[in-house]
Length: 118
Length: 117
Image (cartoon, rainbow over all chains, first blue to last red; front, top):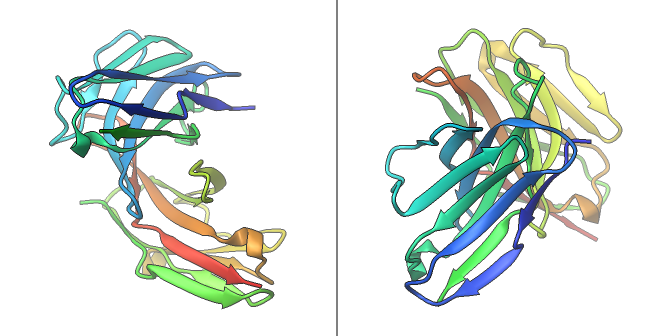
């Protein structure tokens, strides 16, 4: 159990368009979901933490209006990159904490979404 | 401040050799968790192990073993008899509570392991 999916797995878009990435916990309910960004050959950088039904908490330096996060249900969180530009091209990874795992801190990661902005 | 250091950027070994990946962490928390994840070329992070700060017992899982030493703030990972399929980037991570009361992971920069046939 504890499978997290992301859709799409890769996307190419034109500069100025918006792109939505979905993160779903397939076989468990996720109280908290996280969004990370990873540049080539670099580590994961936490962008924001979202809890179901409340506003996301963004890390310092992450533009809230640029990266819109919605956590509408216990199994779905979405990240929308608004007015994407080439510098937004990256690998975006989501993760989820399983409800009931509050004291173990284990995050289950999705397979990632590779965004390329032309 | 919390920090995870993986000093080895890239390691190359020949198949069947043993290899140890180092991880050193910094935290002021008394309760925290340490993790190792594997990221193969496909990109998906694969969970390997979780260790809480009160459990310093070493762990072995098949060819994998982990050595947790609080005295040196290290959580090293050893692969015995390495195989080509072990080639990946390995991340060490620390889970700690933030000032806002939520937990989050702090990742090291990763170690790229190349196992040559």
